[in-house]
Image 1: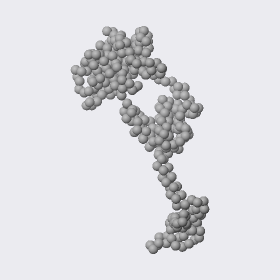
Image 2: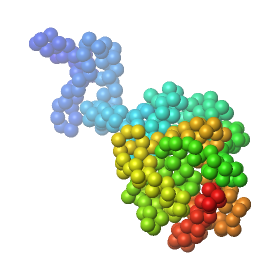
Image 3: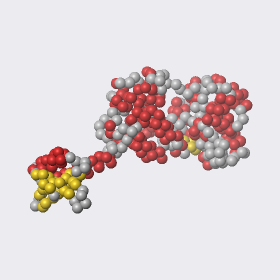
Image 4: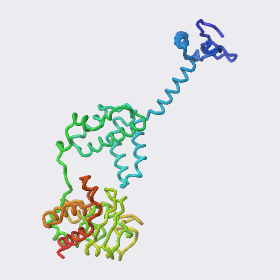
Length: 378
């Protein structure tokens, strides 16, 4: 041990290794604190480290314990630090099971990979600020407003998740109200919302009796069924035989396949029943409208493909729900809440929703029979 003064020593082992040691007494016992190898720590640096240790000791702090505590804190901070990309992946994994549509997770990952990760995906999630959020969404805010709005919402959600998990602190820099709404124009002012193209209800009878019957294939029958039930495309293609009771003219869609997360009872008109009966004659799987692969449903694109074959690129399958709604408003005296229930829309008024217990099934049954007679000139 070669003393330099002030408790600093150069230690030389029998093997020839040289390192700096700070020797001191604390709490009635002798202690030795390593300050580094001579190969990496110069004499001046060793003296500086020894000085810092003496200052701690003079304040009643054990230098070794202080260093140990500091390293523990650093390790904890390192463990708490994750990138935005890692946080996003963790959020998607944690919530995947709760998303009814499997494509939702893929869309989440795809939009973040395209618009967010190249900008700050590898940054610590705790370091994401307003400047970085704007850098990701501002370039597409006016050209792809719908996509940009979804990206902003997904960034906000991931950052909220990270805050709850303890990976970041403070206000969310991706929040809209009271923050980004002061920096970016509202989506509605950037680009007019485009609704699903719908067929005018007056043209529906000819479409159903002249044009659609000329189309062959399961896709055409599924489109016809979707029109007569006023249901969403994914609800129709996912229909299973154990959901349908032809004797009762009833189709019960389970809650996990509904957008609102509630079971939906659909009254089947005679025309809808005929379609189901015709599909039963060629039954090959558990799905009413089977796809090309074994035990898989029809593709969502099948209905759109039918419309394209008909050269009706001006309308969409989903748009027929609007056709139904317009017809009900213009041609019937059916109360609006019955029509909304037929479309499986959530009641916006919380008070009204709290008092409504039934699903107006009998009234909807008459409505759907009337809709079938109008659509098919029955």
